[in-house]
Length: 314
Image (cartoon, rainbow, N blue to C red; front, side, top):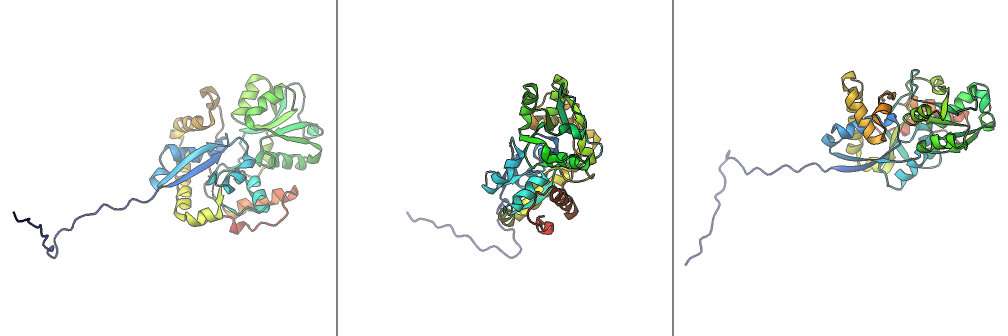
């Protein structure tokens, strides 16, 4: 028997060609480091509402107990992007890490009462002068809450070097107050609400209202070499934050927003319902970094003069 060969005739001009499936754009995986505060709401929303996914980003939020450890985790590639406070970020750059800002989280606001310095019940601490000689817990030495509180003390005529600052993560604050290990804590919701509800402490001052409005409380940062290799991913990350900010700013989305935040910072509904949510600021500009550089220089926290224009990924 003769074996027949199948011969394909050349396609005539204008005939339909065999359609090949388009190559899917590769997905970039990002482990993102956050701490348990509402300033990260835009990241949580971008994950849950699919804003990252539609830009081919697979973002895995990872809880980090102390904000001050985030730059080291980024440097080691345990995190590809993380959310240090501006002061933690600028100190890491001052120390030699080549990290850049991809976007921003929450913003300062004069109406913000979601963080404060909380005195231990019975201490009677109220004024800035009352903190001299006291033990004050902060959720990260050199982080936003610590630097802002020291700025408030200095503005109030108090030498912050006469205050004993002790690093303690947010979840420890209530127990350390109740046990008498600390006289006060610089803390934030939802942990602050729990402390107040339990009677372990009281608000001594909403000190943060002295800060200039519209300044970033969280920066989304990455290694410069990672951004150079993943420019589309870095841009997509920022674009997703912009879309998430629009979601956050719509009053109709508040119930959904609070449910999303609760998933990541693990708070009961009754606490979540009372929490103040930081306004989002997804795009960072030079004057915002300049503000923090000035505040930190005033506290002798920087050895160099950072060129902020080179620190923002374009």
